[in-house]
Amino acid sequence: MVRRAAREIGERVSCDARYVGRVEAGEIRCPNYAYERVFLHMFPGRTLTDLGFAPREAVRGRGARTEPEAPTAYTLGSPAAADALRHHGRTNGDEESDVRRRAFMTGGTATVAAASLATLPLGGAAEAAAVPGPRRAGDAEVSAVEEAVRRIRLLDDRHGADGLYRRAAAPLRTAYALLDAGTSRQGTTDRLYTGAGELAISVGWLAHDSGRFDDARSHYAEALATARMSGDPGLEAHAFCNTAFLARDAGRPREAVRAAQAAARAARHLGSHRLLSLIALREAGGWAGLGDRGGCERALARAHALFDRGPDGRDPEWMTFYGPAEVAGLEAQCWSALGHWERAARHAQRAVDVAVARTPQFTRNIALYTAELADDLARAGRPDEAAAAGQRVLALLDEVQSSRIQGMLATTARVLLPHRHTAGVHAFLEDHASRARV
Image (cartoon, rainbow, N blue to C red; front, side, top):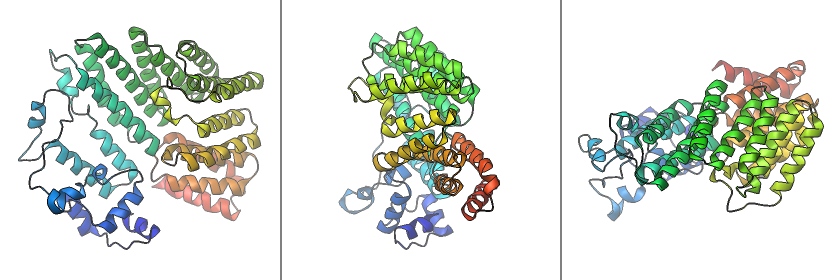
């Protein structure tokens, strides 16, 4: 994998088992410049420290130190908790680097993502928060919950949900244990309720995208209950919005419509046109699932009109993914559900083009839009183009693990079977089958 990446950028590195062993053992604290270029090519947007290496200035020249500074504690609790994590002079930061470095050298990008999620600020605090008589949560603990939500979203954008879902359960348990422990100030309590609810939605989405629909439904319901208890309309709108999406994917289109309408009621006073636009697209998906073209078109028109009003400072933080590519991708799904394959393919192609040009870091979404395009083209009677799109998705599956995307690709492969004697289709079907056997 490393040597292949090196060839892609014209570098020559001799990454053998000995080199891998030295990296895993921590003997190579920072790679040389050639390896650095290769590693950063393999993991766009990451730094060497993200991959478990030491910063170059810490191992070269005057910046080097014999003993590292004690890092900020990653677990919740007093500063003494950091001391408890030191073992024979090693800190939790060292051990976190070891975890990421080993994952980096022995697996693909999704493995690194899972290792990164294992080191979430809340990951080691579940037991501490669950012991009898836990201390009250403060701003540091609430900030850790909020950071957990951000990191889960970032990892999902890059790698998809499979492999992340199980690891996200520990931070979620900790967040609700902190709620049970209570806080000393109302402002802190409000932030903690919102953070725990958003974390439940994020974990629910990981379950949703990895095909665990019952788990997702439970997490969304937990978030909705949290929103109702705290009187948080933004959290309530988000929970209903995701519930609508889940209902559509689970084959309950009427529930999708009703959940989207409930989300719109919760969001109507929040002042975010983009949020209302997304909710309208969720409703459109429900109408499409019911085969109601008129209802779908009315909801689509409303979604576009709201989107065209532009972003606003009141847009929720979690909506960073919602741009022109997502609008086109969701509309493609609507036309696909209605059986208008050519129209669906045009919107899916736009989604792919815009995502690649504007948000290349959202690897999972690019794979999703391309999988949608492949299926629409296959059903529109354009097998060669569908196979080519399918091959592009296969190329992304080393970085993205999403049962949803894999399921879409499997459906496309079945649709293309009658065309298996065509050279391009045959190659795609062979590659898809070989990957399924791994």
